[in-house]
Image (tube, rainbow, N blue to C red; front, side):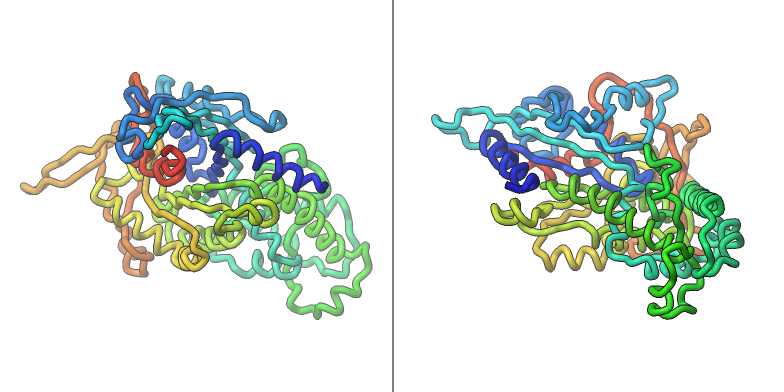
Length: 463
């Protein structure tokens, strides 16, 4: 029996003995995945005690008894660093947890009272929740599977605005004189690939999102390997497909194409096959406010990255056959993070902007009959809401400590409830401030709508 089918049958048998759910926490770099997972575990561990989870029906009905961390099934995957993340949040001063730099996993056993108990099932039940975290940089490699080397090169060389082009100027100048039929110089190839990686790192620091290949940013044990020594090749439009195909194996074009294909087949495809194929539920976290604050070019870059990413996931209804042969994610949440960085009356507008940003992917999801919910949340609150009076008028404001350690009282501005137009960008009507976490107090981490996210993602399994 094929190994994948054997593993899926084992999963089905395990699900028959106990309720089990696999949740993928995904999103682009700096969207807050580590903070979300830390808060999720913390809220469930405090469930039944002082946790504030009124929007989670099982908690509201006082049926949620709590959760414990238990040994995960795959012992070859690092455990999600929950304890280290909590230590960062409880520090003096508190700090945000370090971002994910590799795959991690955590398993929870959630205990609850059934909504409708009977004599043969008993009053209490357990849900095994497997949580999976992945670097946002790696996720953006999934759309590479839809490209050949020529198409990818054109997309990377032609779809750039002036600010992004400036970050790649050093690489662009170095590669501009190369011809597809030139003979490969391995030392030069490695140097140019590193210059391209430097451009990607600079673009990430500048707030851009659509960055490929992702392993150039987080190479791990592939650092220095030839599989990461390739780059897009400008000027291919001047060559016919037939002429390129006729180039010898030792040519620059053939070498780059070969390494690109190897990267697709041996790095990207196994990552997708071995990890994403078995998820039940997914939440996609998006830092809409950060992109909004960064300006029109970065906002458009985020929109393009998200559209490509959403097309790469496999969504649809789950059944026995689809579980064995074409697995699907059967429930999806899309969340705008850092909702505490704007005042509460802006949260509805933030969700509307998120839905506008993902209008086309959401249409496809609804057509596929995939249950999807858009919401705004703050995994760990970093601000407190205040009211200030100006010229006799009361208006909401936020108080917090910025990343430099200064106490701040601010009104960030209005979030547009549709895609920003030229007028919005011209007046620069939004000023986003990054905040430290609030000082840790006894009890669960403060949050905004983590309970709503939990209710959507796992609430139907707690009945």
